[in-house]
Length: 326
Image (tube, rainbow, N blue to C red; front, side):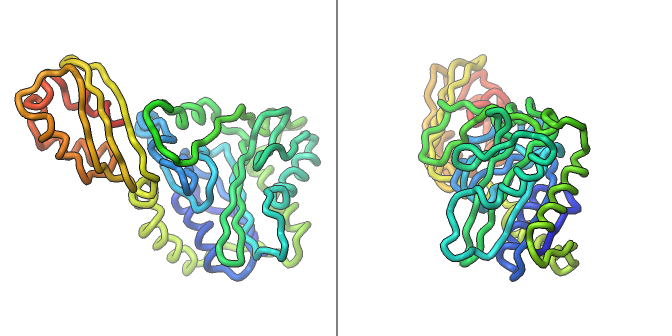
């Protein structure tokens, strides 16, 4: 088994590395990484419906879609992420216990009463500190999970805070749980780096033929290509979202505006704008300008700066109107 510790906090690179290892290494792999502030979206989720768009923009939080299903998770430098990438054994169980057990063993040795609970969570005293997901590729399995060690929990709740009334779709929705940091339950304080050491040493002790492995220049070049072609693209991170309807009402100086969007694969396919505003030009002309655009703040704003908004929405500023799209 190749045991690899990431040397970067770039979430796009780290998520791409998981796919690269899964599809290009014949050896089993164990991968540990820590990301800068980011939201990692499940494969089948509506990305924009999972995040607090304003908070994400203001705090420069990266949004990346992963290969596996499940819900959205918030990563920051206080969160350690682990991935097992292994050849699937015959009749291997589909549950998450096998590859979370090593984590529990480390915590139990530290005197923390951590347990596996529910479908895919690890908890301490009923509070979640780890969510896990998996993805199958040919005869291989990728199972990865988060480990909240010293994360900024208020940031977590703010980044993932959404208005459930805005979106109507069939995408998998994240279930918010009461969460806790591992560091709060340790009898003796240790650093995140020391905790990482304990985990990788324990994994090496329970698996045969392990070796510490560093990504080669060839590996890194291939991963960066995957980043550029997939994981950094709007199409993968947002355009892969299932079809959904978006609705939002705002109050402006020019009156109330209700925005109704139908979005498919991240692109706006229908628009209806209602309200008690006044206009000079037919609002239908404005609606048509958004057809085919990505449901993306900057793309919509770029389109709007080209038109005389006052002709369609009297006494409504561009900034006010943009609030109707997020």
